[in-house]
Image (cartoon, rainbow, N blue to C red; front, side, top):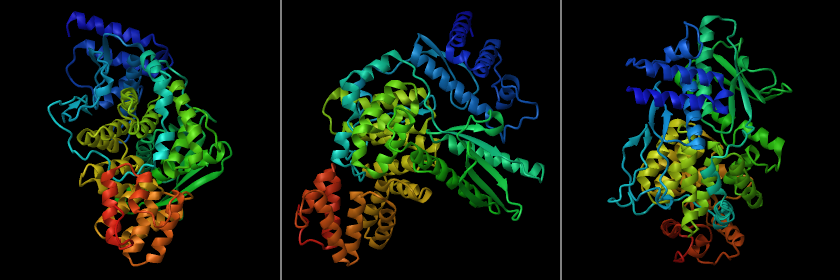
Length: 566
């Protein structure tokens, strides 16, 4: 490193260390100093996690990098703090940490392109930038699939019109305001979960096993953006809302128990016993326990909903209501969601999870908006969220969704698969990626959607509907009927695509009376009669002409109508 670069490196370090965010985080300041000093030393030997842990993070010499991910977690935290600082403060140069490395880099501070109406090209270069799928446009290439991503993600037109948060954000120039100023809000009060991984009485063997389980829990739980994870012994009493406790069952040596407790009252909110005889089966059970706890419809979310009720305050309450809305499509939630999403983005402009959810809503709405500024808003939010946290599954999926909605299947698949890799337990991300891939004629799409249903029995209804429709296209009426019956029985709200798949499977199985009953009810819900042409009803809530034609083929095959109404 030459003298000029060394001087610039020191200047950037000092600028960062004087920032209030770093002043309030002495451990991050110490880590930053260590990395810069090592860079200045000229040592070409790459740093390892053990060195970082013992020399920069204060761990003992017996620290085990195989069982403790603390250095990686702290490096990820520092990486996010650097990204946040340069988004807020800007500058000609910046410090960064490449993914999977323990090295500080001095590089030009490149900001997103000003051409916000063309953030995604029609095609994409498949290379990567900093370990992330490239967004560089390939203007010579056409869309990777002319069909785009219309696919079987069936959106209700009323839902999208009412969800047009873009009008509130772009129309009032709020989006421009927070993107240009980098204004920092306070932190969102996400539910706080402390982990108590007891060693048990059997000594070192159980201690190592407990640590291994704890590491898997931390990795899995951290993939969900709506909770914060702590170690029980590291926090002060009363800092957490929930306690997740591992305990060994003395009556059965090959079983362990997990309990979720209310930290204040000690009430047991959830419990599960896991068999440890087969390690592969045990690890799968543990993953499913993580989903049952932290998923969009998991126990923590359900408990918070029961406590908050119809609270639409900005921040976590609003995000919780949006999760409910996506699952059940309750029309009464539309208007208050408009307001609280708007406020959340303004109050918490550096929270990647908030921006990811807002991008999700905008991406849905922008398909029906012809305003060029409005149509780029979803991608703007998604790019902003991903820049704040490269390792956020929700942010990466928001970028993927934006690409799919722009008709760029290749980019959507690349970013979507990265999101799944970051959190392979989020059924919403996995399932919706599958739906979009189906719309792109990608043969892997149905596998992703089916995987989401297998992982999470509370997966979103639209995912189940899409899988059922794929079954019907292959003539698997019995399987489609079974799947739709199970999900309809578990939902307090109607999902038109699910009802449609149930109706068609019933007809294909010869149960025409039941099929006509469902069809009559669906028609009445849309102000039509049972004799209305099928196409007329489908056009009430399906935007994709391709999907309508595919469903009409299935309707014609079912024999319910003399003709398909087309």
